[in-house]
Image 1 (tube, rainbow, N blue to C red):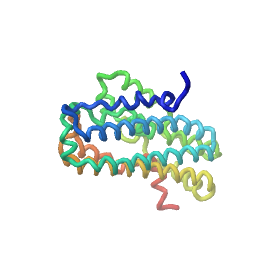
Image 2 (tube, rainbow, N blue to C red):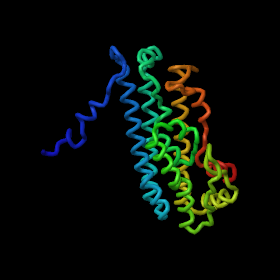
Image 3 (cartoon, rainbow, N blue to C red):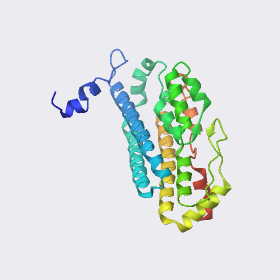
Image 4 (tube, rainbow, N blue to C red):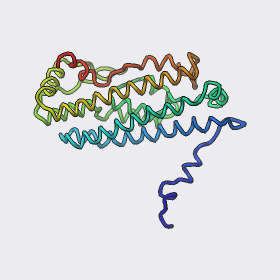
Length: 260
């Protein structure tokens, strides 16, 4: 078969993936499905970029690491902007098909959990959520054994000759490691004396801030759509999401702000 745009991108298969649950079909369920399928594709791309970024960092490759980080940041901004589209759906329009979602919930997104894991977050509860899906549990456990972004960045600084301590994994829930005064002392040296590494560090802060922005916009979108109702799949809904706000991924990079 001759290669064409359609068969290369599997367009026919892609456009057949929007299967309505509502009966009769509700108009806005299409938007809901497409937005969330698109998010899953972006999560896949971010994980793909992380797979390139961490070896680049660990090899001390400053400029290629920056390029990869800038791509991730641009994807993240696109994901945040997509919430504007979802917010064109009113609460009544969402309620028209919400009951058909049964126990399905964005809380169950395995790829987003993989992103969080590589950012250094851990949650035993998330593993329990997928107790009946061992293939997903295995994926997340495998990710937990991989280097986090912060661990790779610390290795990067070590390749540049800094005595950056390796982060110690101490927590089973929340951020994997505690802030380190020793690490912050090294980071201050970097910020004051190494412009290239400092610029890369600032991209990490940009990413951290971008993730917080994503969480905030997500919370407000859910809040304006369902208020304080229980989320789909019996999740806590907006009350759970509020707890995730302001979670820092790289606290040491924030702590040094007042010292620079």
